[in-house]
Image (tube, rainbow, N blue to C red; front, side, top):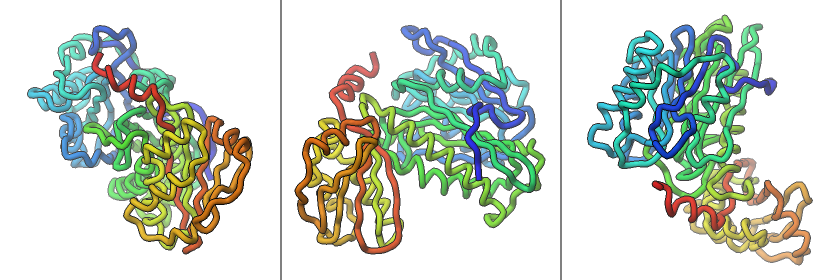
Length: 402
């Protein structure tokens, strides 16, 4: 069991964070560079984008985490440092600037960037101004805000749980609004915990949690060059080090809960979105089938447009399921819509039901809408998340560079 608490990425013992404006984008006055720091070295793990084009910070971070060790994260917004001729050099310089600030070895620094692809990172402004950054155990919100790009709100969560009789904490922050699609998206997620856990096991559990959370979110079908989800575990809770999955149940429950909460926040804040769309597929013969169907519905532009119009056009849902590549029987599919306004069944055994269109529109007009799909073919269920597709999405991405 876990309990939701405050504190975000600094909820765990020994962690602090801060942010400052280095001036990466001269037109922006917001803080654009954040640092997360542990007072002691940490066991570390990370998951990255599956895009074949990978930004320089990912290359540096992969190298630094080969020993499963890190003590700090530096992340800048406003520039992705991707597809730039001196990107690798500048990513290393960014790590070196953070290492100098904190008096740490460079290979103990995780480096992340987010923003425009294909433009040179102004590393000189980071080197010149990073010293203005002040770390604080209350600095989670400042860091969460600094890493935002087209996000409209900061995204953070934290929980506490018990392992080996010791109270442990796990929290995180993330950013993500557009270029969000399974296999991660333009998202960065930073997780911290004071729980002691083996490095190989930490990597295994992080991959599992990401698959059940961030990899089940789709905003627009684009997968970015910079996506990174990393976790630092400093062991200051003084629990006996978790070394096997049998003893990791409480830790994993907390980790998955944090990741799902952050994934939902990303979906709800999709670029231009007016509502969060949740799709749950019930009664599948295996988990992969349920996941594939739920994600196909969430990424369908036609379904997303229908959600924007509060139109109970359930045929688009079956259409998306049909081209998902998953095996199911269309003649057994039931579909219903629900929200805080109620629930309405619209399809039974693959055929239309008579339903109250006025009620359906009221249900689909709420801030969070759920699509319930029943296959009647097994015992597996999976939930995926997305958002509606609005006019504002095009407006935001039509002039993103400016």
